[in-house]
Image (cartoon, rainbow over all chains, first blue to last red; front, side, top):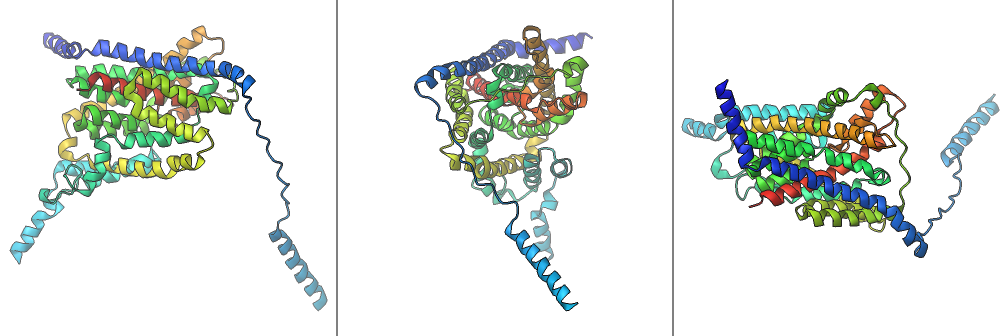
Length: 94
Length: 376
């Protein structure tokens, strides 16, 4: 039991010597603060853009209406034509 | 004739193969098996697995074939890993393929990505406890960021001798995200919490998308200049994408370029896992710490989401807290799957992508910070 405690203390001493706790706390705080600032900045962007858009309005992209594509393609027409041709040929031979 | 044959046999891989090499070749084969049959991070595990096989085929030292041999082909390819060149290039590609819209539409979810980075710093303490030096502990801790390129970048700067083990641990656990995260998510949430439906994200304007990478870079790089290599490229890639005037460059960055770098990076990292340098008690410690860091990061994200719900009017489904672990998009997908298990109509993927991409930024900031603290 005593050896386990000594081993724990030895290992823990390494954490202390390596400034583990201060580095971890400072690291977490800085990462959190950086992302919190980004979060605030993102939340502010729409408000900034309201002002910007007043003077420099965002160009509205008008999508050109594309002509409605025919649902009957050339292949289908060709297939129908071939079918009719065969059908007429069959009726003529009768 | 017989002497020649005996002498030739001495030069073959069979004569020099050690048990360690065989173990590593089996590890490589396992990675290839997992990539092909289980679809676990195949883009990475397959090159790493094949690289591990190649790296563990012994050769005559004077021939200089391996990644650690100066002047070898693999050595030149590995130089990009050692000098930390490939990770920023991958970040450029990630930036060019990432849509930050969900994060921009609900900025408070960024905090979940920040909370999940706790895994990095708790692991750092664990690594110091196990006897690693502070610089090594910093490099090991970044595994908790669940970001392979970031882990490679930082370990190339702080602990190049541990790069192979750290990279393999990071990518292995990223592949195992669907296995590691769900039990922790379930353990820390109630059924009622898992059923929370979130408001759909708002539409984000083009100008917001363009301003974000510029402001984001300024904020992060000015607070933590060490993150410039990674975040500079990430935000640059994103600006290429969102500006719509450099579509050709963005297309190249997110397809051909990122693919080429991924192939070389994965392959050379795999080839660097030679048994003599990889199979050490240190590597076992790194793997144990890596698993802990993923678990802690997941738990931190989920718990922070629950804390946010105490103060927020619009409730957050705590399952998306786990997506703060920046394994994109795996951890977001896990949140989606776990959410659907409780309520098949509750789609969390869009919401989970916000902490997920925030986690990428968070882990890069943490890497820059650790680099600036431990750089000699």
